[in-house]
Amino acid sequence: MSDTTDEVRLVPCEPGQLTNDELRTLFLFEKLTDDQLTWISEHGCTMHMPAGGVVIREGDPADQFFVLLTGTIELTRRVGQDEVRTNRTEQRGVYMGATNAYLRDDGVQRNYMMSLRALDDSDFFVLSATDFGWMMREWFPMAIHLLEGLTIGMRNTQAAVSERQRLTALGALSAGLMHELNNPAAAASRATAALRQRVAGMRHKLAMLAAGKVEPEKLVALVELQEDVIERAAKAKPLTAMETADREDELGDWMDERNVTGGWDLAPVFAQGGLDIECLTLIEERVGTQKLLDQAIHWIGYALETEQLMTDIEDATGRVSSLVSAAKQYSQMDRAAHQWIDVHSGLDSTLVMLTHKIGDGVKVVKDYDRSLPQVPAHPAELNQVWTNLIDNAVQAMHGAGTLTIKTYREDDHVVVSVGDSGPGVPEELKKRVFEPFFTTKPVGEGTGLGLDISYRIVVNGHGGDIKLDSKPGDTKFLVRLPLTEPSSA
Image 1 (cartoon, one colour):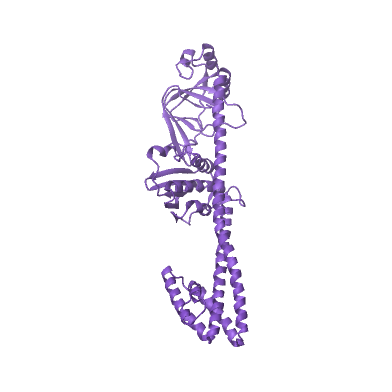
Image 2 (cartoon, rainbow, N blue to C red):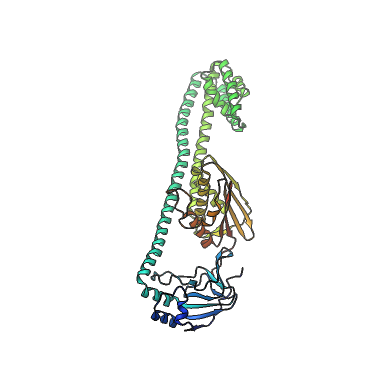
């Protein structure tokens, strides 16, 4: 398709070329009075555009209103680096350009939303945006009030609903984050309480050992033995559930044979620490007496539990730290609004933030190309896109399925694919998924703005593209982000 960056060819516009009867053949003007038609004829002009000429360019100030007289035209819109045809027509009387010139001046620059090209020699009737706006406001005040109310009302409604959706999403993320933080925080609290009891028990057992008139060299040997046992536990390989159960039985029987007090309670502690009969035999050899063996095994058991509890606390606090780090990364609160980023960091932080919502029934598969270069982006905005796409995917699977996040390079773009194994999007709805307020979710469960917002962020904000590829069991949203800064032109 041709490039709309071609210079617009300014063709002379000749005033007064259409008579009242000629204007009345155009459906826009067929009901106007002779005086009104005369005013339009005096203020308008005709324009001839040779085949291939660009009549208006997307993004330029919308300062003219065009009505097609003859010829064939096409409307196109820039999507990322591609030019997409939105309409092709040869119908006489169709209009385009400054179609909203009648709206009150709100200080917002109005630009052409699409490009217009003549496919063959074409003729247009042209009014300036100023004249068209004055004509509409003066001749049709009631209609203008209705149109303004409709346009501004829809704009305000969309802004309000968009804000509400962002607040709702923020609330859901906050609730999920609090849930995720509560689990490790509660685990750390429980482990700390248990640790306090075990440390007190260790002090008590140490006092009992000392009161037992243990020879100094024996006590030193016990301390060394404790260190050896802790080191052995740290190096022990993890056991399966079946292996752990068998190990507990073996240790329990060994302690029971030697009349160790509460041996079956101590057996799980030693088994979790990865210790075996060989280790217990070593303890027995170093202790020597039966009475001292009972106290030594309890003392070492307390030491093992202490280590295990400290590991639990370390894991829990590490989880809290990682969640806080992910929340910080997700919100981008300490980073510039626009920068070069690695898309994987945003994807990972979003997955962490949505862990509670994803649930245990959804398997997450990450197929990342870590060699991808960085892209110029607004990271906080892209995180909103990832949130919307992942949230939609999880809801489509109803809590059970496979969520696949894939990244790869395609020419001069980085592509992020968010896929799910849900039922898919029906063919007749695929073209509407990016429309504002369109949703396939039940009433009250969706605003229909998530994908619209995502589209505007990716396409308008980053010069990229977002597409849907869907079939039953395999639905993917493909986000293409350019590797270069979008042109300012």
